Figure 1: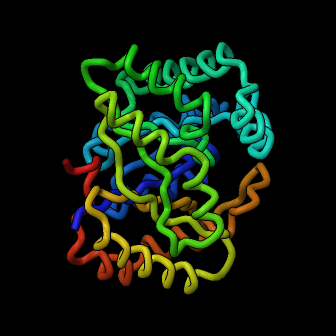
Figure 2: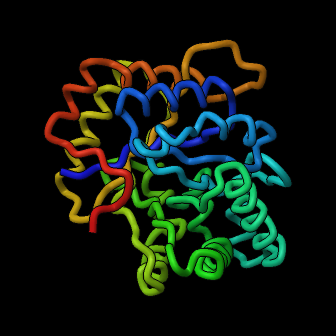
Length: 262
């Protein structure tokens, strides 16, 4: 059973970066999503060595709500649904983030997804597909489709209804490879034990997918952080579970892959 385990938010903080790199080194992750608008992106990118790139896909975590000229997630959703976002500003930001990715790594992204799944919102998804076709027509990145299974509850339902099907349909029509269901959505509350139980449930969902699913995670090591991270304890819990021997045993029978298997 093929599975992509993808860590989000690379370059947001040193604790996140170090946790992600460690998990890649011990073969617990197969993809990492990068926030290239972060002030520390160029420094963080140096950790993505050739050896790390062999083990994991390196993708762009498209960001409109955290770094740069960001706005709140709720406001972004409302503006996109009412088609009031500036198309010029959307394109400018996407190009800026892709340029920063290529400048630091000397390569285009292996895939694209979105911080808080913004890549699938109306207006943004159209501009994103247009730009990716323009820049990478000969080697299109694959796209992460944010479509959690029904069992992931209300949060998963909200995520999937904000454009996942529309993005997938249009992307496939244009020749993009897309991932299957998105696993890993939860409230970021609970203990390490709670997260371990959730993870076992998500692994069961892998068997129900015909396309390669992505199991997203948000790990970080336990260290002092300069900025306030509202989900930091959840990140530390996730790292502990992902780095554990029990987790390695749970992965027996699954094949970690770097991109969707066609």
